[in-house]
Amino acid sequence: MVGMVSRGIVALTVRMPRWFVRWVSRRYVAGPTLEDAVTIMKRLSGEGTCFTIDVLGEEITSMDEANFFYDEYIRVIEAIKLNKFDANLSIKPTAFGLLINREAGMENIRKLVALAATHDMFVRLDMEDHRVTTDTLDVVRELHKEGLTNVGTVLQGRLFRSLADISECETELGPLADYRICKGIYLEPEDIAFTSYRDIVDGTNACIDRILDAGAYCAIASHDYPVIQYAKSALASHKMGPGLDDPRKNAGPSRHNKGPGYEFQMLLGVRGPLRRKLAKEGHRTRIYIPYGEKWYEYSIRRLKENPTIGSQVAKAFLMPWTNRP
Image (cartoon, helix red, strand yellow):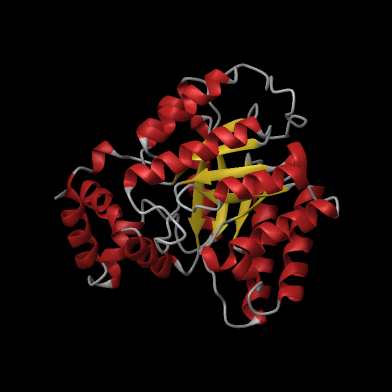
């Protein structure tokens, strides 16, 4: 019943006027400009959190568009340094042209990661749908081979392949592997992905175990209580947690502006009270800050690809005081 109601809310929302979608999305998207993102981060910095900044847009149609994203991320790096934010970058490989011209797209990503490295800044390659999973992992491997180790990627617990991907990256990247693990927003075909809630949660938790066992950095990106509780238990079993150095013998060196082998990540505007609770307990927390002119497309895509978001839309509308950013 809850799922049906949620899907109904989504079906209604995507048909509403643009202004209404903007009203719904304003708590989840900083705004259309970098200045909007800076304003949000200044406001939230006092909560002891850190940030990942994402310029919205993907699946471009020309390399001219890729150049726009490259230039915009240069501005992001400058803003981070100017404001002394504890922040890193999240980029979508397709926005840099990876599917249009792999060589040129790879060069764009390489230049940005190299520039970020000069500022001791980390770059996360966001994971898109299954069409680019292998390409995205290949980019990370290639950059690490070139000595650019300030880059990692995202794994989706719903994909059958994720455990094997962790094992393969463990062999090639060793303890320098760095993952954001999430359930995954894309509703993938059932022949390559789990489709039930319980199976997706179990798949995500299995990935958390595997990442921790591999000595890799584990960024737990979830708003689900079952995933977060499981992660806290898994961390305790590895003797990891607030105020503790990473004790894993196979762990890599401590990372600047990172937690002791792990952190928790959440989307802007989603379960802020839970994030603050984790921070109060001493866990490092990070907020994903998306901004850009493509806010409308981003919002509609997230709604269509994951109708369960509908319940969050209803809550934001009916009880906004329960879920402030």
